Amino acid sequence: MADNESRLPPGCVDEAQLARTQEETQLEFAFLAAYPRLSGCGPIPGFSQQALRPWTSGRCLLSSQPHRSPEELALEREVSCHLPPGKVLHLQLTENRYTIISVRRGRECYRVRVHRMFAGAEARLVRALARYVVHNDQRSSTLLSEFIEKHQDQIRRKPSAARRPVLRTRGRVYDLRAVLDRLNARYFDGKLDLRITWGTARRRQPQRSIKVGTYLVEDRLIRVHPVLDQAHVPRYFLDWIVFHEMLHGKHAIRRVGGRRCFHPPAFAREEKQFPDYGRARLWEKANLDRLLSWEP
Ligand SMILES: [Zn+2]
Image: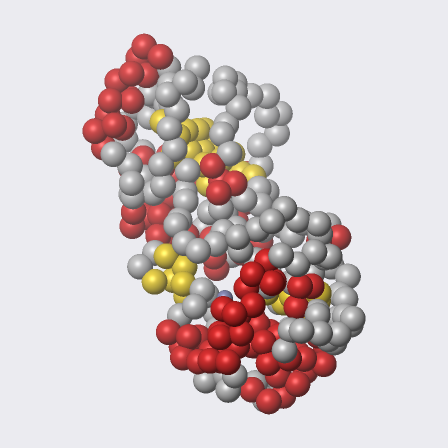
């Protein structure tokens, strides 16, 4: 039934296509599903690629929901007030971790699944939600993104082992704890409260790139690729990689023109002040092939 279902990022909805699809619904009973998505350099919980997960096609509109909470009914009522005449809303509150808002636009009804954080939201958010449901408009989508980011803490954390990784700081050559503490004291007045670990060495296919350091925002955790735990890797290079990831711990991710900016100008300026910045970049260039061909 949802053969010509399409998914568009907010603000990219083609009104002509919307109208076309709504006409087609008479024949095909298809939905235009638009999922919130923001472009950027990384996933945002709530607006990640996983938000594009397709709906199960043919899902029953009035699925058996024996009990509906008062908050769910209240939000449904509030959003309904802003719908065009003749349209019906079926709203469901979820505890989803990735798909925070999803909308299916039918000929007569909107089916909306929205995270519980929206229960009891203030009137302007409810209006924005309604505008997003009906028009998929850019301004409301920005407002909703901001609201979601502000209420990240309400998204239930996955209680898996991944949330509490075992930290392995002592390598064969380098002790990351010592590296982190030294850099923290020297460049950050010892104020950065971060964790660090060596990543897991895996057998790999030959690669064209290698991620030598990563920073996990939620865990405030730096992960360093074990390829750097070798005697031929100079300390200043490892320092620079860890320093870069520490800067991620210091600088918040900015939003510039709707895009997330991981390396804002202040970040880049500070990184260049690292005394071995030039030397480290040169070493990286000269030794990239050696790093890429590394085997655990
Ligand atoms: Zn970075």
